[in-house]
Length: 573
Image 1 (cartoon, rainbow, N blue to C red):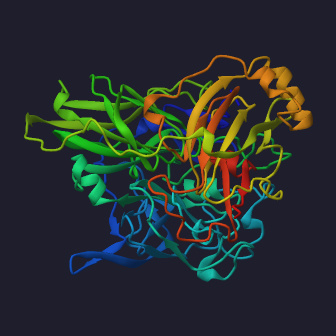
Image 2 (cartoon, rainbow, N blue to C red):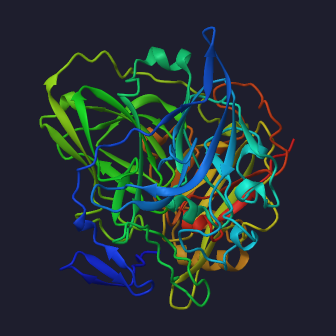
Image 3 (tube, helix red, strand yellow):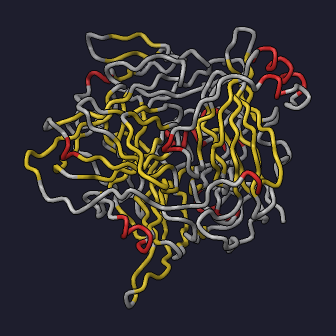
């Protein structure tokens, strides 16, 4: 989808707003919101453990989903949102940052307090939990990056409505169990209801989750403590003049899908719930755990004053060594764990910029509004900084190709009308509702050849499994190969080896470790080694990974995932 599907609007620049022909309600011009006037919030931190006699012990949490109003900008009226929180008054967008300790389990009861009517338009023609629920808004929570039991994975069909009155076909239980036995790192939680992920996340149902391991992490000496170790949850939104969220209610193919659009792009860039915020920092090192929580927007972050990112972790794992980069490309759902040393700044302020085209990589260039993310105001005086960035971080086993028990071909397709308007996407020519075809064995590794036959870069996310990217090979004569694949849906029968002969693009140094999301290049075959076991230990899973309802893998552009670029994943013994 090289084109950007724009809102059908008549812009009245004189008054600073647009009139949407679909809904007839004024859209706010982002130029009317002054940048860098709101302080960057640090979202509430919720401890997932308690300390008894100096020992961390398990704790139970109850977190609800509430409809409330949220202030995204000083000059914007309060916005109706869906928000996570321990109570309605404490609910935030993003939700509270849940802090866990390695080896100490958390039990979370996720409660749905949402009203019967959604605040955003949803499409009944794509597989959708809303068409099955008679009353209420279906939700289910997925802890992204978690290595846990299927019953607590937040399967798209495990949805439930308010007070658990209605439940999806894969619903298992009210309280989810997170063992936190995996390596330390960054996760995040978000809604995962079938066909509603894009609207429920757009409404605000997102939040950070951190697993800490003091014995492993303290010796590293990285910046720590709430003041110097900050999650940054970045996403894009468009608003009406009354403050409400805007999502186009007319699809690009309304006769097929009355509401679904291939990608959502917002005008305003939001960080921790504020549009273009500012943060006052000291001249020292800070750790930022950056999450791209956008529906479809990629970000390529950079500074203009010479500051760099010291990349220490990707998704849920540490790098083996820190890698310094000038620019940082982060796809939807990806996480980048970085250190920024403000003591090296020659100026007293710096703006965090973005220059990623949308859709990525061949869409429109950024403009003066969505090219800016936030501003850092740097205090003038140097100070003693005892934190450091060591030469080595955390060592995990390198991917062992010889250990792979089997290989699979995973092909990404896009389907369009005669006028080249997308109607849906899928994986291996199958819908999310088709029977499972990927059944890895617990404790094994597999080689997956991921073939992207579309024009978009698709961030592939695999639940439970971690993977390492081995190589990226360009497909030659791709139109010829695509024609065969659209007919046969079989890479071997279409002689993929004949076409996977183009240039190889090296995996960048900071993404060579174990990941749970990766950017699949358009027109390329990307080879990954997927591991269905822990990477930090030889210990077996402390749960039955073969139980129902199983897991899934999917594109994490939410508009694609909902229609129907997701497949079931069932582990076996």
